[in-house]
Image (cartoon, rainbow, N blue to C red; front, side, top):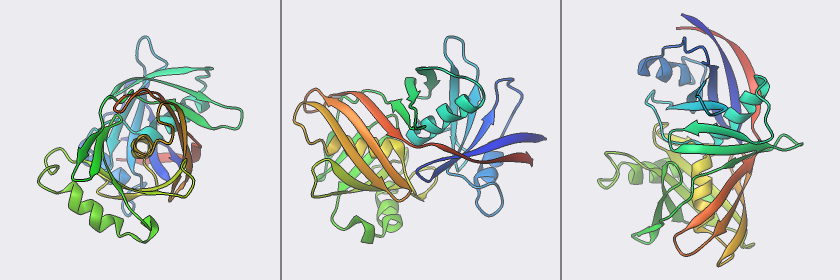
Length: 260
């Protein structure tokens, strides 16, 4: 079987995208894993299908690089919105369905894609660190000199510890810069089982933990290995965050045909 694919990236978080509105494509876990392999396939952190869904502009179906269906992917969602635009689906405000529910998004005049994330109602403290779900489960560990850290080693240890080995968790190492609204985030992602250049739901989780306004509007600038993102949100109280928007670039890299 041969099909047409597109490659997109959002701050270095890269994805294989396929227009599956005709519902003709059937991929196995093994197929997806091989396509995402950087030696034997196209190479990507994940694969996504854009599908029709009644009542929505589209549905986003996301698979991790290991071929298993994944939870919400923030950068993937932003890339999917830009992909929809390039396919001719033009909206002032997009409304689509993902694994964690309904999302809204918009593209500004400079091509920046802003994606509305799910509300967060709990941040759990765990051995001095933090656990929260922003569409995917995330572990936040505050560190100094994050760029010198062995993220693969430390992230692997936490992700495969007895508390998380069954369902897995994404592990984020976060450095708070001198400015209260600026942080650096590096992420070990489950499903990829390695550090990625960026993780949208991880960046979102880190920004919520690193709020700088006690209550009300917050805007946190985030540096990742692959570029810069920003997260805007309203902090309602200690555990509740609403109107969360993940903002940043999403670009088409190339397209082609592949046979499986």
